[in-house]
Amino acid sequence: MFEDQKDALNSFESLRKCLKKWTENPDYDEKDIRNMFINQLDKVLLFHNLNSYYFINTLQNKPLFDGILQTGSLLDYQKLLQVYQVQGKNALIFQVSSILERFFRVLLQQIKPQSINKPFYSIRKELFEALNIEQNDEWNAISILSNIRNTFHNNGIHTSDDVPSIMYKNINYEFIKNDIHNNADYFTLFMITQDIVILYQKICENSLIKSFALIKG
Image (cartoon, rainbow, N blue to C red; front, side, top):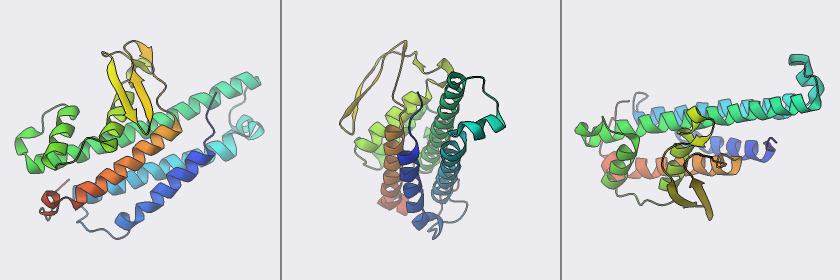
């Protein structure tokens, strides 16, 4: 069954509005990765939130839905809603993952030019170490996001070796080999995105990162 998106939509839109302190009053050149990343995140959330609004106010009204795509039964209708919602989540996960990885790679390339051609986990680990950022909620948030992203090509099945349980927001997140995970609920996706914003602020306030007038993206 699909999740209720109303609370999630309100939370994501409140978070997006918090980005305005960076997007509307940029501290960096438009070609700076610090400016590019936060504006990209703003666009990702804008698309997600508009899509959620459409889902709630149009697609969850069966007569309106049938005006777009006729469904033969209530069961067919509910299955299509679930598919639409999953694809909406997948878009959010993929887009946030992609811009975050690019952000990290460009930052580490600025700090350690020889480090760019490495797996994302190594990039993330080296960046956290270079900036003396603790591996706490923000680290765990990205770990969960990356593991969810890696199941896309396998219909949500985690095909790699078991991942040790990740404690995040007092919840244990597990990725078991050859099992379907159930970790992409809206509460988790919102908390991950919020922690990425918190991490962004920590990175921008870091003395080493602040020493670069321009980090070209």
